[in-house]
Length: 181
Ligand SMILES: [Zn+2]
Image (cartoon, rainbow, N blue to C red; front, top):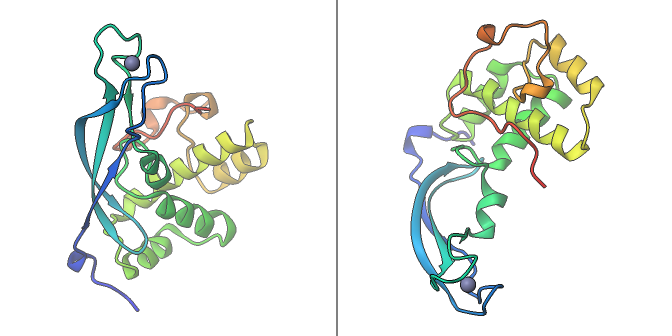
């Protein structure tokens, strides 16, 4: 059943980082920061509050380290408002079904995802960046397919050298530029 994206009301959810003890000195970790983000998933939008923790001992070497809720990285990429389920759905529709961007956009809107047509292309870049990270190497077949579909892969190391950076559309927010372990 199709949904009206404008009718989607984000569900309030709170995620709290570990409140166990500091690995350095055994002190209890305290909640020191609340970060709020809206995350649009395939089936629901979440008004998420992420509560970060920190060791409060000022003489602790890890005093400045903040711990984030583990759920956050499973839910959404940094600086992104669309969930990982949306990212993988866009990638699957584009790379496996060869669906056009307008078709992918229409399907997402039908599910209630409040996404703009152009944003679908930016989301695909995240998917390509993620899959290249998972592979641990540059997948030449993926690059070739992306090139045929006129999709630019954002990480600088993967950009074709012949294409000037100024010709690339600037996504907002910026996709990840490196793979993290
Ligand atoms: Zn500590």
